[in-house]
Structures are given as structure tokens and as C-alpha cells.
Length: 257
Image (cartoon, rainbow, N blue to C red; front, side, top):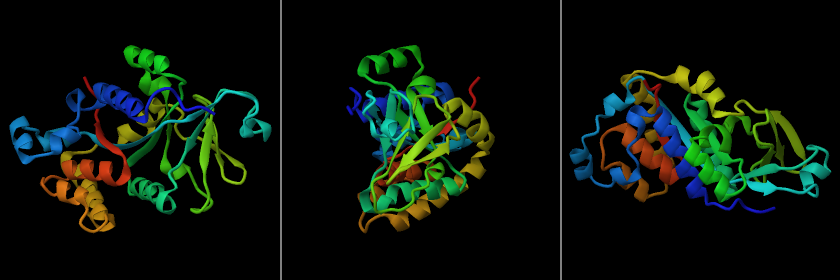
């Protein structure tokens, strides 16, 4: 049951850069280093309202999946799958799945939120997909937090799936099959994200609501809150708080010419 031969950071970076090249305003989004000082903000001249206009905020939480390559895998022995290769995505158990619960709430409030996990085996495959610009559509699997219904918050849970399959299994004591909403990003983009593009003014409200919620949930004297409050606009604040509190990346979707 090996880890893939690349880091979660490498996978997430590759996915996010390709997604933003394809879909983000101007092909990029102000990333974490751009948020460190107000001087950076002033000198780089980001127009937040222009970024938000006709865009849809999207939150990604990146993971690597274990790779199951033999028929000895529990999932195959149980009869849930017939053959490898399978991928196993674990959910964070910390604080009784606090992160998963928070992501589900964020999605339930009308935001586009996704777990993005790997469905390739090694660094060569990742490099080839990055060079061919196929990370988004072929190297990554998507799950929305609200399709992952945990039976409890005390036991270990994981999802097992085959690449590009329209179903997966949630495992606790036994596997429970579920239909995947989005086997590919293109499906999520067309059915969920694209219809959520809104005006800048309409986008500011859910961002501000997320920031308000995050400030109440953050630990006392949180460094994340201190950094976020250096800036005035909810987009920058939400991006910082999503990263530090939810281990999630906030970016923007917009159809590009």
C-alpha cells in the first residue's frame, strides 16, 4: 500500500497552477506570498472587484491517495472491487474531523468546495501530466465534502475508488458504496461552478460570511486572524483563513476568452 512517489505539495501545486491557467481571471490568482504585507498589496495593484466580477470562488483541499496494486487489498477481498489499481483517500481525524465538518458547512452555505486527490502512481506520471496540461482532467479525482457522509466522528474513515469511476466506497467498519457527483472536474465545472459565477458585489457577501465564521472558530490569539486582518477585503482575508484553518486553497473560476 505505497504512497505515490510525489508530495502532496507537488500535486496540489500542479493542479492549482493548471486550473488557474485555464480558468482564473488573468490566468492567475494572488497567492499566499502576495498577502504578507500591505506594501506588497499596494505595489502590485490588485483590483479585487475586477477579480471577483463574473467569477466563482472555489475552495480546494488537496490530498494524496494511497495506491492499492494487489488483489490482497481489503476492498477487493470484501468483493467491493474486482481488481486493482485502486486509490485510497484518508480523511483527517484531528479534533473529531473538525476540518471535514467545516468544509461541509462551507459547501452547505453555497460555496464550491472540493477534496482533490491523486489518481496517478508516480512522479513521472505527474510530470508528464503537468507537461501535457492534463493534471486537472486525468490525474486528479474530486469529491465534494457533502457526498462524504461519515457515520461517526470517532473512528478512522477512508474513501476508495478507481480512476474516473462514477462511484466510490466509504469505509469505516465496512464499505458503503456511493455515487460520485463529479468523477471529473469538467462535470463539476459545468454543473456546479460555472452557474455560480456572480457579480463582484454578490461574491463579497459569502466571502465576508466565511471570514466572520472563521474568526469565531479560530483559536484565541490565532496568527491566521492577525495576518488576515492586515487587509481590508474579504477575498484576501478568506484566502488566508482557508489556508491556515482548513488547509484549503481559495481560487477563482471564470470562463476565459
